[in-house]
View 1 (cartoon, helix red, strand yellow):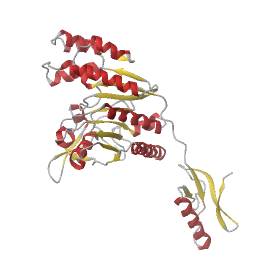
View 2 (cartoon, one colour):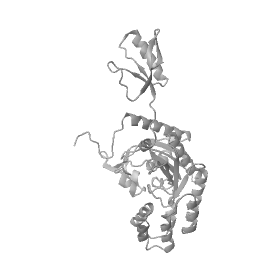
View 3 (tube, helix red, strand yellow):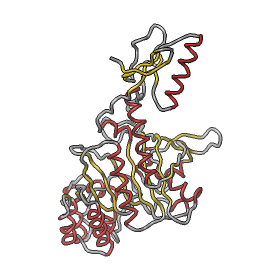
View 4 (cartoon, helix red, strand yellow):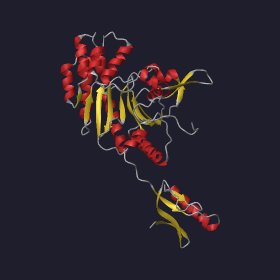
Length: 387
């Protein structure tokens, strides 16, 4: 095998895509800053127990593990940034009130999470800590939608569910962790026959409610149907009421519901959402409430947020036009060269891109579209439109 062949689902990012990714990254961070979110930069590598305690099996399986040559302790390469931000909120900031934090950096996955996906997503996310009310859930949703608008995504659909619905139905059932995980998988796959087999020993109201969940997806009428057919409990009523409130406040954004959707990491504790572009088969954004995520760090604060893969987002939106640049000649020395360098520096200080044509390479401009040139007229260097 050639030394320069990269591992499966790992790839270099070439100039045009890298430019688009970087422009998107800046737009997303600017959108978060507009809501008052502060940027944090957690490390790519840290102790395994800090990364994984309380996060569930799915994240464990996605995490690369290695031994620290300095301490001998097990370390992990982050597969998700949310637990790290929870640690920052709990131990480094330790604020009493609301904390709004955002981040953007690479994560590594042992396996791609869907066909043709990269194992090195560039994860952007925003999280709000310290407010248990639905206002925080709504803010996270609105920011997620504004981020997609900043990325120039077209029409979107918000799909919503709540982790408490299944939790309320299974409350009191004496189930092993493996059986619970298999029930969750059958619900996510809408596999009614597998679900019937797994729940054969459960009380009839619980079993019938779980089977009904596989049919409870669609528009707002799903929530009314759920109130009729699911085994009632205060937790269920609260979850359905919260979903109705959030959907009502999204105004003109199309909303659907999937009450059996349990995809994502185990730390979700309340309302969850996924945002799809029109016609897309996989979500561009996933998020929700995860009030328990800080418990392992000794500070169980209310928390809600979302994340997205910037590299995946680039693939879902039209390419951005090249930024217009100015072409400049190359001069070796003397007074004209000094004046030229001064003119180029002045243009760059104003935010212009100036590409100097090196000797013998006058027409080799790849990534930048030069629509003007710096030329000498009456002893002055001036910018003129290219014909």
